[in-house]
Length: 547
Image (cartoon, rainbow, N blue to C red; front, top):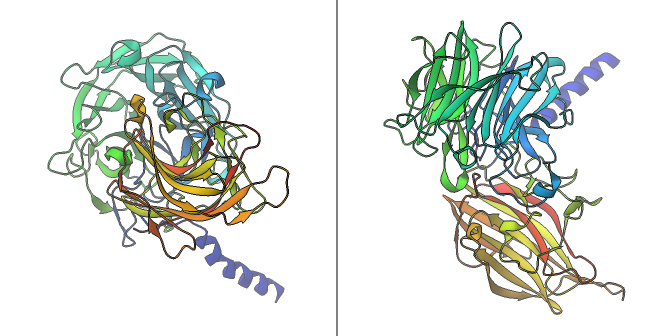
């Protein structure tokens, strides 16, 4: 009888466990009928790479200056993905990356499984090629917090997009591309030998492919071996209008013969390239690649791969599918990358700062809020472009509404906080203390990346929700609901005192991408100068719904 009660208890808990998988109200690629609709990730996971560990798939992507970096996503079917962690918590040197370094840092990583270990290699175009690794536990699981500290494998400028290959005899090779902005040349792929443990170069680089004019901007190579052939898969032609190449050789150092295996063709999917070939445990072949969506960044598509000709022909005879049947899988769980956050257990995994985190920027509280402190701006402040303490996440759908419940506690004039949509252009709905009340303002900047100054528009004057009565360091407080509604890159702002009746807050804003990343949205807390005590913005929750 006791055993039967125990079994009944376990069965009763199963729906709760399944319900814990996050499902987006705004975008899910799984159609629920055995098919999926591209993109499988409608979010800026640029330069994606994926590897299989049994029936588990792990994806990482470029993170540039955003921290934590090197996001790790997990899937059981290549369609349904969730964020499980990050492999990089701090970028070094701190004196550089404690400041916002747009477009610098982690470029085009590769992820590989070798000897029960996951390896991630990436190129920092100003420092060299780096690697982190983590052990793979039982049943293909990677434990959070197990990633090693970054190791510099090859120091130097200009090297980007590295990918290792462990050969059948245990020797290790690395292919990489070159950044013209640092090296003075590009469209070239080089291969060199690494030590067997993948930690250092033991051979000099050799050029194995020069795209020249025909395949200009050849970069982002991925290295494989299949049926005795060495394969390099790489994009060419540029981000927006390029195509996917495959090249093969019987020798690791070439020469390689080359073919186009996917391009836009008659579809509306531009620049379908740069990604990962995956051979699954169910003997199927798939390719994940990005597609440039402008302000939304580079989103991730999934295509079948046909090897019947001896070449990896992708999609529908070399043109990308918008919809297709799902890969074979033993899992039927629908799950999406996290968006909502109640802040009951610190920060969700979707959040990143614009530079290395500092404890003054923000901390979780015991009452289920995340507190962002009003960090002083420099005396020559012009815009948020150079501000490191922006807490942001990626848009994950073309149409959505994000509503946040916030409380601003201000102890001095000029202390402020609010909701921002950040990119080369940005706009924010900000609560600012002015005297004994608050002003609701829109702070907007066109051309922030070019040094333009933000403009500020006052929309309303609001009275405090609460005041401190003690004489020591008193604060005034305002509770408010802030909202953005995004539709095809157009952003509308609104606010409410009761989460029922919302008031329009200024004109719509055209979302614009950042440097090598899509636009992001989240929170800012700031002040003009720190005269005594910081104020703060307590974020109770943020929830994403359909537009």
